[in-house]
Length: 363
Image 1 (cartoon, rainbow, N blue to C red):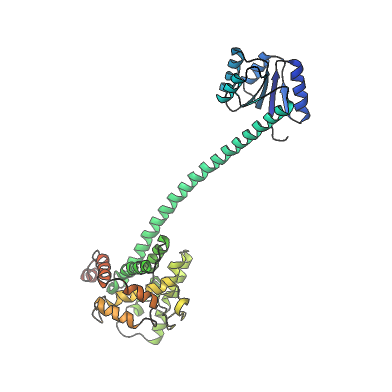
Image 2: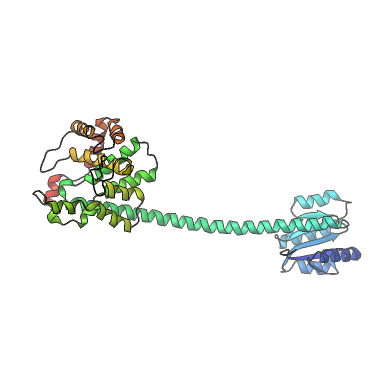
């Protein structure tokens, strides 16, 4: 029986002890035995490497009970198997209940002795495995807590970086300052109206909306801020910004919804958009959501080349373009919410932004 560990055996009856020793040795158990109680005491009440102690006691007077208590006190992890006659079963049972001994068997019934050793060995093995698992679990928990803290720190840094990048993009074109933040709020509301409840997806839609125009970093100001009409060549360069933005974001491994909005936010439901002329369900849902949110903010916002229009006018234009520019399902979701609620979202988002005049003064 491999992995059993060293077993200490002592019995008051020499003949009985010899019979037990031969029986257990024949079962390939590592048995150590001595001749006297005093030597037993010296062995068990000093540092040792025994895993089990098998003690055959003919009687259970107070001196021997004290001896058993001392063994338990000195080495709580030692498995103690008491082999005793049946003349005082109540006392033996009390020792078992108190945890002074771990197993009880009759010294004259050898299969019972072997069974008690085997059971106690299995119990010790299980307890050892549990201790190992608990240590591993404790280490895993500690590591998990560290990872969670690192993740939260990284998330905070990431969100701060994202906000700063979005602000830098908006400041590059003061005419549309605050556009990304407003569109992000609209997009999240539309997503909720479309029964998207997963918090991580909703947050990714927010992040994608904030970063939708990140590709414009690569577009020269001479084209991006040109006051007159763009040439065909310049327009083709503008149309590259979704792919350029997706390439930038892909390198930092943002999640799928974020990349989908950046790459597909200029696709149209009828397939007439860019950069890949996707149509209908080929366009990711989050990009179809964003397209409407983007248009809603554009229609209701001031631009130097035109005045802003009210939300009623925006609703009519969006409805007219259902099935062409916009996904009809997203249009239906938009129309299910009162225009007052959309206006409230805009007000709560833009009231914290500096005025347009202040932005012009700062540039």
